[in-house]
Image (cartoon, rainbow, N blue to C red; front, side, top):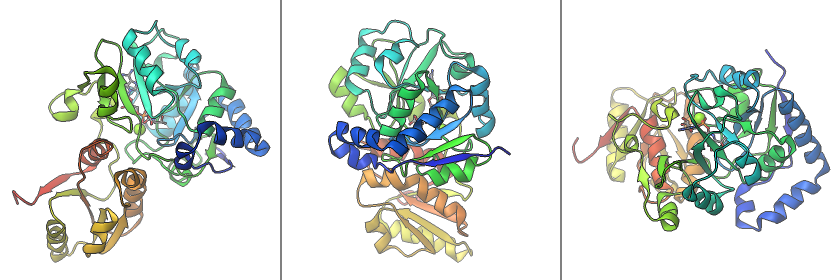
Length: 364
Ligand code: TXA
Ligand code: MG
C-alpha cells in the first residue's frame, strides 16, 4: 500500500469557468498561493516518476511522466489496465505538442487550431519522444491539451508530457469526482489533486487526424457536427456503428464503464419503462432507475437517480449515477435512452457499451 497524498485545491467549477471568461478564473486560481503550492508539489512528484491523479474538464486523469517508461508502467499497474491500450499524452501548449509528433498535416493543424485546448484528443504521427508503453507500440500518439485550469497549470509546471488515462480501476466508470478516484485508487497511486467535480463528465472526443479526413474514434463533447462545420467531411470509425468491426482506438474494444449491477437500456415511452420495472419486480428484483428528472417524477422504482434536465446534465451525472447504484442494493439498473444529437451521441455510446441488454418496447 502506498500513502496517497490528497491535496484539496481551491474548487474551480469548470462549468462556470467555461461560461465566464477563461482567463479570469485561471488568474483567480493563479493568485491562490496555497493552490499554486499544491500544484507545484504535485508537478514535482510527477517529474520524479510518481503517479498523480488530477481533474480535467472531462474526467479525472491518472498522470505519470510520459517520457519515463517506469513511471508509465505504474499507471498500468495501479489501474489494472491491459498493456495493449495506449494512453493519451497531455500537454499545456501547442509548442509542447509539437515536440511529440511528426510535422502536422494541414488537417491536423486546422483541427488543433480550432479545438485546442478542450475536450478532444488528436491522434497524430508520433516522433518517438514518449515512452513506447504510452503508445502501446503504435506509430501514432493521442495528444490532448485540457482546458481545465488545474490541469493546465499542472501541465505547465511539469513541462514534460503527462500520460494520463481516466483515473479509475480498469472496467469501472471514469471518475468525475475526487471521491471516485479515492474509492478506486487510494493506496495504489502517489497523489490526488482534488479539484471538485469535473464539468463535462464524459471522456474526450478521440479523432484520428493522420490522414486528409478526420475519423472519430470515440465520440465526446466536441461533436461530429462541430467538426464537420470546420473541415467539411468527417468519418466515423465503423466500429462505433457496428459491433463486428474492430475499433481503431484499442480501448474501445473493452466493455468499459460496466457497473457491477446489470444495466438494461429501455427504448420507448415512460410506460415502457414502468412496464419493464414492474416485470423485474414481479420476479423479486429490486430495480434502480437512471433517467432525466422528468421521467424520474413519472416512474416508480425501488431507487432512482435523477440525471438532470438536459443532455449536458445527463452527461455530467451519468458515471456518478452508475457508481451510486453499485453502492446500493438494487439487482438491476434500468436507464432510458436519449436523442443521439450533439452530446447525446457520446452519452448513448457510453450507455450502449455499459448495457447488457437493450429493451425495445416495439419489439417486446
Ligand atoms: O477525457 C479523456 O480523454 C480522459 C482525460 C483524463 O484526458 N482520458 C481518457 O483516457 O479517457 P483513456 O485512456 O481512458 O482513453 C483513451 C482512449 C482509449 O480508447 C485509447 O485506446 C484511445 O484513446 N487511444 C489512445 N491513443 C491512441 C492512438 N494512438 N490511436 C488510437 N486510439 C488511441
Ligand atoms: Mg478510461
